[in-house]
Structures are given as structure tokens and as C-alpha cells.
Image (cartoon, rainbow, N blue to C red; front, side):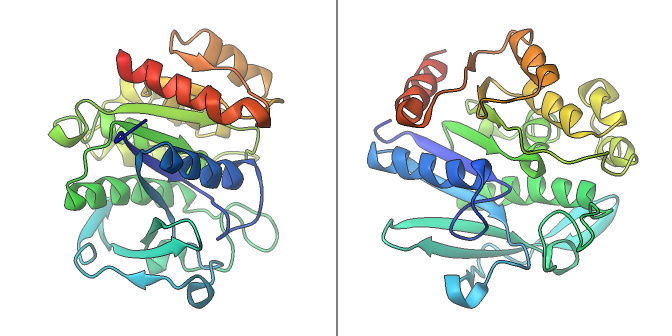
Length: 269
């Protein structure tokens, strides 16, 4: 992994949010790649329940100030950054007051999904790409974690397909048990098509359930990692029949080395 550039994009990450499979892996994997001589960038949403003062987030003026179009409406993008203590690793936060400044991540106090989670996911995907473009940082690997990051493969392979920066990037999606019940807004399909993305590229999203979001991410990825040992049968079968290179679940003591080998195999293709 020496000098390879790996872009990690995650819905959750410790120490900024609570411990779970997604947030722990989103911290441990970049840390490991960093120790192997890789260059990393990490992106996540700046949810309102992330303590800005405690974690010393600060705005990056040169990266902020642009507007992103979501559902035909211009929406301002703010980029903040923080350093993980003792690791010398920076995390970039995608921020927008309307979408992310709430006291929870994906659901309200009654555990009901926020009705605009679909637009939040679109904004997050576009925000990551536009910021990486401003950084002029060409990733060898783009590694996705969590369903709110799951639209990124679709947007890179369609909406941003002519961006030279990502032409040779390998996209990997890690698939987790951690899901949500029900569906996102059923207008997600139309909102994505309004960006000029063909219906054939997002057919699954006519019914935007967790499984369908992940299936669409897999469709537009170069490799897949099964990140939970109890992944549901539907997703397991989809991965196995997708023709995509995939890494079966690896226990904690084998996980990092298994990821390193998988990364290198994809980079050789």
C-alpha cells in the first residue's frame, strides 16, 4: 500500500459517533492503511450530534462556498476538518445546515427515518466528489461504508463519468448488516434521473430500501467486501452472483491483512 491513495467515505466513524461495525471499521481501516504507507482521505457527514468544540472541527474556507444542486435546488456546501487525536489523520466533514444540523443521524427521537434522507445521501455523494476535485487528489481506491454513502459509486460512474480524476479509481463497497426499515422517499429515483442519470443505471432505486441501495452501490463498484458475519441472505446471494470480486467476511484478527490483499488484487486489474 506504499504511497497508494485511498479515499474512505463513511456514514459513521468513531470517535465522532457511537461504536458499531460501520463506525469502528471506518476508523480502523484508514488507520491500518496509514501505517502501511498509504495516503488517505476520510469523508463523513457533519451530523448535528457531533460535538464540534470537543473534536475541534474548523471550517476550510478554500473548500467551502460552492452550491450543489439537489432536486433542482441550489444548496450550500461547507467543509470542515478535524484531526483524530494521536493518529495524525484528518477527517473531512460534509456540512449543510438544512440537511445535517440535527441532534441525530438518520432518524428522529421516535426512530422514524428523516423524510429527506434520500436528498441527504445525494448531497453527501456530490459533496465528497466536488471536494476531492478541489483538493485535486486522485484516489487509487475509493472505499464506501454505510448506506448514506451508497450513492457515491452511482454518481462517480454516471454523473461524474467524464471526470479524469476518477478514471482509474477502483471503487469498493463494504456491506453491513446495519440497515434501516422501510424505504427512503420513493421520489429518489426521479431526483436521481433529474441529474441526467439513466433509469437503467438506478432501476433498483424505484423502491429505495436498504437492500436496493446496497445492490445499486455494488452494481457500480469494482469490488465488494462482506463486512458483517450475519449479512442477510438476499444481499449475500446478490454479491455472490454479481460477478464482482468480493472478500468474504474475515474475523477481526484477520481483517486488516485480508483487506490489504484485496486492495492489491483490485489494483492489479
